[in-house]
Amino acid sequence: MPKELKRLMTVMANSRQFKVSDGRFSQVVADTLDAKLGDDLERLKKIRVN
Image 1: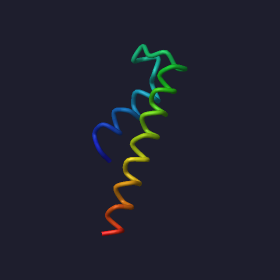
Image 2 (image 1 turned 60 degrees about the horizontal axis):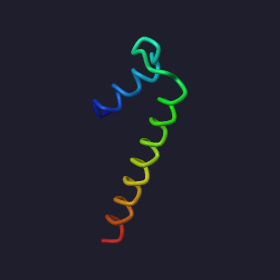
Image 3 (image 1 turned 180 degrees about the vertical axis):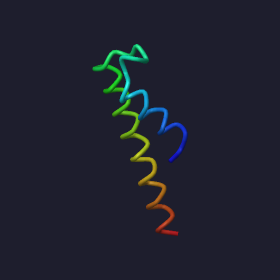
């Protein structure tokens, strides 16, 4: 598991400890993960076509 993902999971699990407001932070994280997933899926599709 990449370091960034481990760090993100730690912050999400302990958001109050990191002094992060739950609602807005969760939305930003979800949007970022969704974009990364979309990028990864597109990359895999391109690899499969070639």
